[in-house]
Figure (tube, one colour):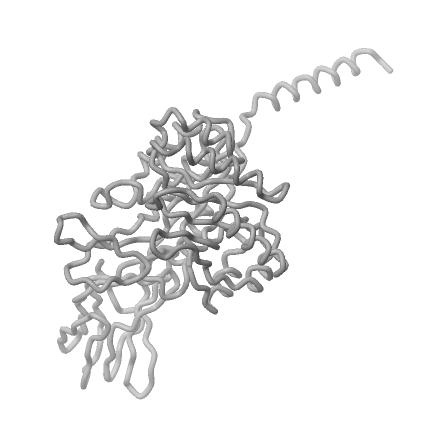
Length: 400
């Protein structure tokens, strides 16, 4: 074989290797997981699980909790449904931070029985997560508790903890993180609620600081829900979440902003902090969960899709009698618009429904919002009805 062609091939291969080596390494996609936090499972879980399966790799399920007055109690999880889902599974044990002390013997007994019952139902959790809001001064005792608990767990079962940004200032944090396989840094609902539910800049800063404390993998727990603040006689706000509180007073609604979370997710994918293993979303939404994003919006944010909002007005009826509905055809949950106008021919009767008041003229029906509610992505809401000789299809305007 002639020498020159061989040299050319060697040089070409070398050049290709150099060019390939100069390409920046693409960051692997961040793992996306879900918390299931309902204390009592409902039939609606079946559909929610099915619709979430393609976008979320792992389920972290509230399974057991200990509270100061109520003691230990199980979440009423549908174990056959969880088994049918088939995804990797992590059991979450919530231990209230207000407990005066951690009882290792009692906790170990409760956790061992939980794992045995799940195993008998055909479930094989890959991990156990302890969710305990320990004060920073008590971290040494918490570390000792975790080390001893780990000795009692089945071989191969990973141990993780929910962690708080306040621990970043503790000199005991490195030892705590060495006691577990991974941690879940919660960056929502960790400050005075009057300052908001979530701050993306603060969350990113906490994640970067956390990445420098330990070489163990960690996850970020991110919000996909809202709360309401009620005034209290003592001046401090009372938080209303999934369960309505029988208290008077005006509610101030706080909802995590999907666009803020989408922007943060993109930044973390583009430049992830060291040891960041993924994102865990709180929580799996069910139909009728008025303080959670819809699953459509949650999946769009997790995937990094562009968020878009769009209303469509639809008419349904016959014989001149129409139901008039708003349909959210985007992937972003929306508050109903302030005003909707339709071009019509003469109408014999009409009225607004579901928080809309009708203003009528010979050529227009104008529905004005009196109270605001959110409509989930893909959802619909009837805003009124009309008996008219004609309503122009497509001749409508929506004003936010």
